[in-house]
Every structure is written in structure tokens, then in C-alpha cells.
Image (cartoon, rainbow, N blue to C red; front, side):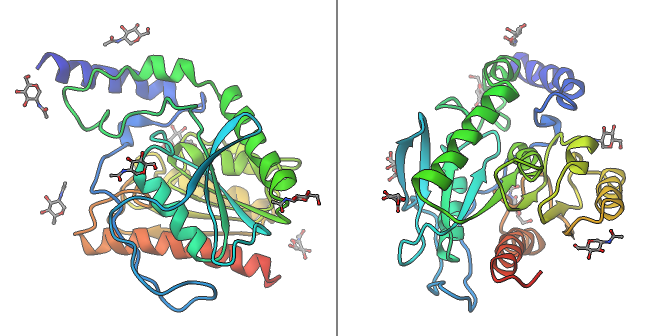
Length: 288
Ligand SMILES: *[C@@H]1O[C@H](CO)[C@@H](O)[C@H](O)[C@H]1NC(C)=O
Ligand SMILES: *[C@@H]1O[C@H](CO)[C@@H](O)[C@H](O)[C@H]1NC(C)=O
Ligand SMILES: *[C@@H]1O[C@H](CO)[C@@H](O)[C@H](O)[C@H]1NC(C)=O
Ligand SMILES: *[C@@H]1O[C@H](CO)[C@@H](O)[C@H](O)[C@H]1NC(C)=O
Ligand SMILES: *[C@@H]1O[C@H](CO)[C@@H](O)[C@H](O)[C@H]1NC(C)=O
Ligand SMILES: *[C@@H]1O[C@H](CO)[C@@H](O)[C@H](O)[C@H]1NC(C)=O
Ligand SMILES: *[C@@H]1O[C@H](CO)[C@@H](O)[C@H](O)[C@H]1NC(C)=O
């Protein structure tokens, strides 16, 4: 009971701080089943098959002073890259690595930086009532300036170390905000996709210049109908190249982990994956 009270108090206390400070609105974070599988359709450079739960198949390297998880496409080309900005659970959450592997199987060289320098939020921190994890302290350890430094290093590695000529970005929850920030002029990213972004400000959406695709969940309290309408209004008024999708029964975090035994949640997760891939493929091929 003591720890339950602590969690509730912490979550309530944390929520007002979350907006405008670059941190996820954690009252909306939910745990779910692990991301388990992707069903493959017909697609260029995609091997048919299903990734079941198990370990990721990429490699972890050091570059530009950061730890990067790398997933290569078939053939090993690094020309078309995706930089992957994770949720607060980081590259240590197998779901994130499996999703990176999945994006690689669609033909992209995927680079997933360790956004928290080996200090992510533990996977069970929000769902385990006995967790002693202190979110306030964690936030203090990871200011936005640090996240930006890590992302800049990752983009430098992708462009000048791996010689990528097209650089896309995907971002989930916490990471979604950084897709918007890096699609601004000089941000180093050409085209982006974010699912259930957290804490992104109107100014950040407004500054986007690259093509952007967003996936929202109906049940995500971090992206209310009002928030979504505001974002779409900003995109329209700014004549931006954009696309948005809204998935029924999908909660905050659904594109990375959700309850796959609920058909519409599983559909939402897989569709968010294909949404990103199609958006990037079309851009790389010059279709828009
Ligand atoms: C998954 O891979 C990581 C990194 O190689 C390794 O540390 C870990 O032990 C593996 N886990 C399992 C269950 O094989
Ligand atoms: C939390 O701790 C209590 C007391 O040690 C224990 O009875 C309970 O099973 C624990 N709950 C979880 C989810 O681990
Ligand atoms: C979490 O850390 C903050 C800052 O150090 C501290 O004020 C707070 O008491 C801590 N909460 C718990 C439950 O330890
Ligand atoms: C990137 O280009 C440089 C200069 O041409 C070359 O030395 C390096 O091997 C290339 N790196 C990769 C990963 O292809
Ligand atoms: C989302 O909308 C709520 C009101 O519904 C507002 O308080 C909050 O600032 C908005 N969040 C973002 C990130 O725009
Ligand atoms: C909007 O942008 C497109 C190119 O993406 C351009 O052709 C069009 O003229 C722009 N419209 C306005 C009103 O600026
Ligand atoms: C996942 O959904 C199934 C079907 O509705 C339900 O039985 C199960 O309890 C859910 N699992 C979790 C962890 O919520």
C-alpha cells in the first residue's frame, strides 16, 4: 500500500511538470504485452516471414561517443537510413530493438541511439506497484540538452560515418518530440514518422519543414482530440507535407507495445509500422 501510494502520488505530481519540459506525460504510459510479431506482406526487399518474440538480431557499436544499436537491411546498404528515437524504455527494451529489426527488413539501415546512456526507465517501472524507481530523479539525469547531444551524434554517425544519403527518423512517445524537432531547418533529418508523440509543443510542430507522418491512438491521453486538431491545423496552415492516422482502441505506446490479443490493438501496431515504411518509401522514390 505504501508503494502504491507513492506511485500514485508520483504520477500525479509528475503530470503537470511533464508538459513543456520535454518529458513524457507518464500518467498516460501503459505497459502491455511485449511486441511479439510482425506479419509480412509483399514488399520490396522484405523477406517474408514473421519475427516471433525472441532476441533482436542487430549489433551494438560505439560511434561519436554514443552507443548505437544497428539493424542492417538485406544487402547491407546504408544509403537509406532511419534514425530511431525511442520511448523512455530505450534500446534496452527488446520491443524497440525488434521494431528496429523490422524496419531494417523493409529495406532501411536502422540506427537506434541509446538515448539515456545506459540509464533508461526500467521496463516494469510503471506497471510494477513495488517498483522503487524515482521518475523525478530520472528526469533530472536526462535533460533535453543531453538527449539532443546524443541525437546529434547519432545523425553525424549516420551521415558521415555510414554515408547515408537519405535520413529518415521514427519516434515513439518520448522520441516522437525529437522527430518534430529534427524535421526543422538544420535538424539533420529529411523525412519523419512519429507514433503517439509526448509533450511536443505547438512551436515545435510549427517549425517542421520536412514531410511528417503521425500515428495516433484513440485512447492516448497525451494526444487528445483537441491536441490532434491543433497539430493538424498547424500542418495545414503551414502548407506542410503531412499525413495523420487515428487508430481505434489504441493507447499511448501502442506502436511499440500493446495487448496483441485485442485484434484492433494488434491491427494498430502493425499498421503504424506500415505507415512509417510507406511514408519513407514514397519519399525515397520521389512520389511526393
Ligand atoms: C539478447 O541479446 C543481448 C545482447 O546480445 C544479450 O545480452 C541477452 O542476453 C540476450 N537475451 C537472450 C534472452 O538471449
Ligand atoms: C509487492 O510486494 C508485496 C510485499 O512484498 C508482495 O506481496 C507482492 O506480491 C508484490 N507485488 C508484486 C507485483 O510484485
Ligand atoms: C524522488 O526524488 C526526488 C528528488 O530527489 C525526491 O524529492 C523524492 O522524495 C523522491 N521520491 C521518493 C519516493 O523517493
Ligand atoms: C564512407 O565514406 C568514406 C569516404 O569515402 C569511406 O572511407 C568510408 O569507408 C565510408 N563508410 C562506409 C560505412 O561506407
Ligand atoms: C493537449 O491538450 C491539452 C488540453 O486538452 C493541453 O492542456 C495540453 O497542453 C496539450 N498538449 C500538447 C502537448 O499540446
Ligand atoms: C504548398 O506547398 C506546395 C509544395 O509542397 C506548393 O506547390 C504550393 O504552392 C504551396 N501552397 C501555398 C499556398 O503556399
Ligand atoms: C489482453 O487482452 C485480452 C483479451 O481482451 C485479455 O484477456 C487480457 O487480460 C489482456 N492482457 C492484459 C495484460 O491486459
